[in-house]
Structure formats: structure tokens, C-alpha cells
Length: 282
Ligand SMILES: Nc1ncnc2c1ncn2[C@@H]1O[C@H](COP(=O)(O)OP(=O)(O)OP(=O)(O)O)[C@@H](O)[C@H]1O
Image (tube, rainbow, N blue to C red):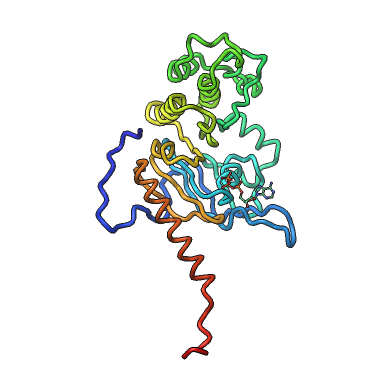
């Protein structure tokens, strides 16, 4: 669990607050829009989103299915082109970069952990971990490698191939691979989706410690309140907008926040679908 103190909630007060800009964000998006498709089939997945992600902090992104979480993550990571608006990653505007520069940036300054592990089956754990650095022709920093291997608890599994590892161990290899190059940001998309509760806890603890002990910035998309509770802040999306944020989450606080947000959207839906009085009854 996150180590910060959880403030007690005054009865009747919202836990949520409007998303707030942060000083020196590692990621910053302004008026970010992403539209898929054209004409009548166009879908606005993100609609003029302003969002800041704090440096050396663990940020979770939550929201209903289709609210734009993956799209936001892909735009922030330079995996997907934006339709309009800007994205700055560690001070550089990536929203206007060429594909060539983006490929370089993704190799050197961004780490990824996906739900499906994406390890190369023919390579050992050690080779999988250093693969992004090898592709980028970057020398492996031995001290960092040791530090990361110890943090993920894989020292005795380095010569194993993925098929010889458990699901949890494979995901810990994926964590090590994302962390070894000391990227500006690690993006984790449902990183514990396929794991049992013990392995889930191990992976979340690795992410938490990478923030606390290595100063890593981590952004994680999740549907799980238990997983979001490991973060420093939860940002909630709804219909392609940032709806609110929750500082110092715990499982209960996230559940309360989700209830509050779904109550708000039900109320808004009811207001939209209630016919306006015609005056006939008056
Ligand atoms: N490649 C695409 N082409 C067309 N529409 C897309 C594409 N990718 C996403 N969308 C649409 O954009 C909206 C946001 O999708 P996105 O995957 O970002 O949501 P999400 O919050 O990550 O959902 P989930 O929790 O189900 O993964 C949805 O309406 C989705 O159908």
C-alpha cells in the first residue's frame, strides 16, 4: 500500500477535487483531443484534456470502459498521434515530433508494462530485460541493472526463458525491462490484469518502490480500486474528459469516489433525459 497518511474524511464532504496542475510535471497535456475516424463515424476519445502528471510520483488513471484511458496513455507516451493540442514529456513537446524521433524517444525515455507480457520467448530473462537498451544501442548500466534485479527479486532467474517462469515472474521481468533504462516515465496498462493476488501485490509493490526508492515516475491505467490504492493520486476520466482527481487513495476512498462519480453521471443523464416542462400542465 502507499505509505502516505490517509486523511480522515469529514462527513458529507467530497473526497474528489478538480484535477490540479503540478509544478514541474514529467508529463503535461494541454487541450489534448483525439478523434478516431471521420465524418459521421468519428469518435472523440479525448476532448480538450488538460492534464499534468507529477514527477517521481505514482499516478493511477481510472474511468469507465470507453472513457479514454488507453487513448490518453498512448498519446502521453507518443504511441498515438494527437488530433490537436500539445503533449510535453520531460520538457520536450512530443505531439509535433516526427515518427523517427518518437521511436527514439520511446526506446530511450519511456518504459512500458502491458497486461500481456510481450517478452521474447527465445531470450532469457536477462536478455529480455536489456532488449530495449540493446535495440537502442545503449550501454547497460551495471549498477542500475543490479539495483533493478534486486528490486524485482529475480537474481536467481536470469538465465530462465519465459516459458520456464511463472506468470508473476514473467511480469516482474517486464517491470525490470521497463525500469532498467531509467526512463523519464514508466507506463503500465492494467499491469496486474492476468495475475493472482500474490503476484499482483508483488508487481504493485515493485512499482511503488521504484517511485519511493528510485524516484521513478509511474503512470498506471487500472480498473481495480485495490491497485489504484498503491498510487499517490488517482485521475478519473469520463467521456473523454478529466472528471476529477483523488489524492492519497485507499481502496475505500477509491470505491467512494467511483460511487460519487457514477452518481453524478447518473444525475446528469437523468437531467438530460427528463423532458423539459412544456408549460401545458401549468
Ligand atoms: N482505434 C480506434 N478506432 C476507433 N475508435 C477507437 C479506437 N480506439 C479507441 N476508440 C474509441 O475511443 C473511445 C475511448 O477508447 P479507450 O480505449 O481509450 O477507452 P478506455 O477507457 O481505455 O476503455 P477500456 O477500459 O474499455 O479499455 C472509445 O469510444 C473507443 O471505442
